Amino acid sequence: MDAQVYKSDLIFTKNDKEFTSMEQAYLVVENGKVLGVFDRLPGKYESIPLKAYESGFLIPGFVDLHLHAPQYENLGIGLDEELLTWLNKYAFPEEARFSDAGYAEEVYKEVVRRLWENGTTRSVIFGTAHKGSTEILLRLMKKSGLGAYVGKVNMDRNSSQELTEDTERSLEDTEAILDAYRNERLVKPIITPRFVPSCSPRLMEGLGRLAEKYDAPVQSHLSENTDEVEWVKELHPDCESYAHVYERYGLLRQNRTIMAHCVYCTGSEKELMREKGVFAAHCPISNTDLTSGIAPVKDFIAGGVNLGLGSDISGGHTLWMPEVLVHAIQVSKLYYLYKDKDCGRLTLPEAFYLATKGGGSFFGKVGSFEEDYSFDALLIDDCAIIGQGKRSLEERLQKFIYTGEKGCIIKRFVEGNELGYTER
Ligand code: GUN
Ligand code: FE
Image (cartoon, rainbow, N blue to C red):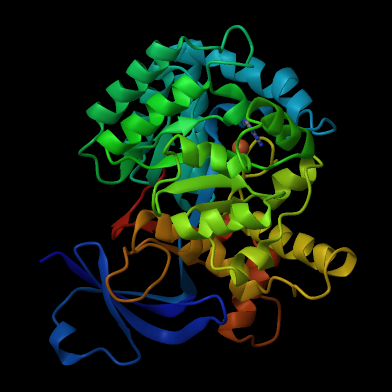
């Protein structure tokens, strides 16, 4: 038996209503999973080695449900543009550089190191359309010990010339990756049609078949920007909505599909998402940076749609999930003030839940310290930010989320393993 006991302050969310906080509690881990949390250590665990972290506190690791690793070098660039212009001017030219394996290796090493540094223990990642560079990213993620889904992007229409794929080749490359990584545990492939405008019906149909054959998850973009939504209507006038296009091609797999953004989803789209257990990846920083809009997250929560948070770099300008979390709260307050007084505002426990257990549930039992959850955790040292007075554990977490930085994270664990610094 591989077991460990951690003694520390613990704070996490079992639901989106409130924090569970325990001071100087015991967290027992066996084979990477949480066996339980206890105020007093039960006698039967006394022989297990104990590690005490008495001055810091443990939280679940952050989950980023949506990011574009190859856009890392573009962080902060071009954000006066809106989505469709930005894609052509900034995202596509940068992604085209990933035909060069050496460049991919350099940039992806940096992205992996940054994910580690920022305490993002699980992420769901878009690569590029290139098979070779996507395999590099899969390999580097695996080496890091972080958990991830990584997708080779599919795009065979309405892209730049360099990135436009031959449909059959796109499907073959995707299948080769699905096949090669089918038995992986922590870092797995995900089918990644970029979005409806860049995928022909034949490509989407083929991807739907592969999803079924390999029982694979799917990620894409949905209803992010008004021009994009209009464009999809023109391309697929016979479909009831944008989401129904994905549904037609078998790309909304029960509880296994992530759709990024969902800013302009209609009532019937939300209903379809709820039925299919689609995860909406709310990317508030990106939606503000690209002037896309404000996703009605409180509606999604009230409607029982699965929900998590995404940085969406480099539509969003940071990988730091506490900033994404704070921005989610801020834009929900603006939505409440200016758009809909009935919907309420996102609270800190709700946003923290989304950044941990909400997104984590795409991976299974991830994002909490409840029994049988993967022990994915961050040890936070808040000495530098706590100030003078005595603070409750919940206040210390609030301060960390709003004013902390990555230097406050002093240990990272995934499935019970402590992950050391990843050298460049
Ligand atoms: N829609 C299609 N591709 C992209 C992308 O790279 N970023 C964002 N934010 N939206 C997209
Ligand atoms: Fe995106």
